[in-house]
Image (cartoon, rainbow, N blue to C red; front, side, top):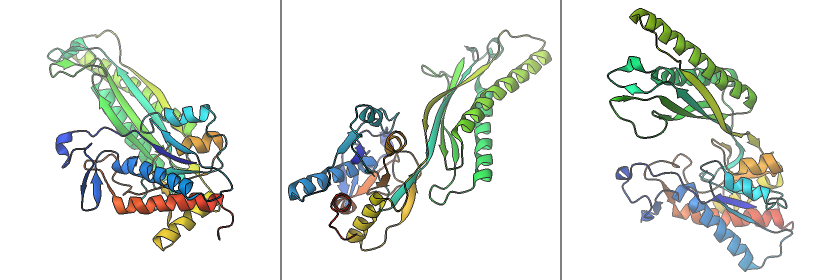
Length: 343
């Protein structure tokens, strides 16, 4: 199976782009635009490779299926629906077509994504004592996430393929709904957290850590407000609440470097690039996470594009590398499905 996703992330502030983020501008052998690197370029290479194999009429010992899926950048509903419909059932291996700059990735970080909701009470900005401000709790949660990451790094160290674990607040929003206003103290705030894990981290423990952070934050900030109220000689009704909701849980993945799909990818890369490919890990999760976790399908992740460029302003992909990637994809499938090829 080949798999690539069709969706892209937001371009952000278009004024910061040198070229139209959806214009597919070509300059000096590079195509610029949101999704060129992650991962429409590799999707195109995958489709070209499949078409070339079909047109060549080479007899194969199996078949090839292409997963052209949506929502990889979100909740991965596309691949989960693909699996639920039984489309992945025949697959014995998968190539995940993502920008890895020629590396052959046999491991992926896990992910726990969560949302903290801090609930206080809305008030006029000039009369904050008539409300309960969620901002101190937001600050404490962000500090707490940094502490959790520091502890994880010290305990687990650096994985040779996946680097470091991380606890990253990615969305901090107050109010949680509706537009902010300078003279309005919000009654609710939201923090979305993207935790990326490496082998050795137990996801149940991560959930417990985040739940404990929510509980301890609420207790500490309510004590702070009560102490402050006593100093002012007032008593505000109600209290601040902090809840945490878990959005997704994706395990780490690892494919044995001696698995046939890894050997096929390495053979194909050697044939096209003329050198031994490097084995590495994906710093994030991909649709392959669910193919591996739910169906036990061995996966490799590889494709054209600088792996640090996705989601950035002026995203780009090298067109010559894309052509070579299409060749590597085709030869990977040929090697895997054609036993007569010299391995």
